[in-house]
Image 1: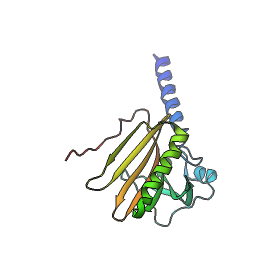
Image 2: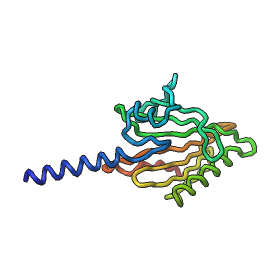
Image 3: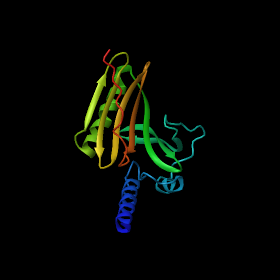
Image 4: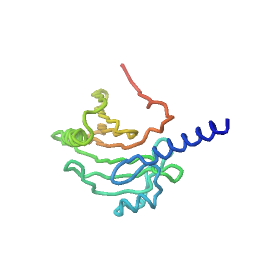
Amino acid sequence: MKTVIHLTILAIALQASAASAQALWGGAAYGMDLAQVQAKVPQARVPESPDELAGGESEGLRVEGVEVAGHRFQASYFFAGGALVQVDLVQRAARAGRADLQVFQDVAAALEAQHGAPAGSTQQDEPFERRRVHWQVADTQVALLLFQLGDASLVKVVYQVQPPDAPPPVRLRSDG
């Protein structure tokens, strides 16, 4: 019986360390602390006004002017309990001439070249435009999003790890 308990504990520990080794973006991996991320991403700085995610995760580091597919983004590193849990790349793009859509398409093409065909995509145009394309890379979920915000759009790439025991992500759907 003791052997079974020890093996179970070992299996759980190995799962946790496997999740913590999952690469997110820019050399940072899930579970790293702030100092470890800063060592991997020396240009990262503690933001003056950090953002916070809906789950309470707070932005511990930020890099301005990151280039992705020829476009400039802000990289934000989010931490929970001192451990890195998510990296967001964000750009506000003008809708005039559909510059926002060009950014979205360029980044989608770059992600597809890097990760292969997407696992799925959605698009909704009413009451405002929203697009989402996502990839599953090992335990890392990579999602590319476009949200219309008046005369601009937010183009965002989200890198996060799905813990082994986590339920599937919630999908909100509106059929009218």
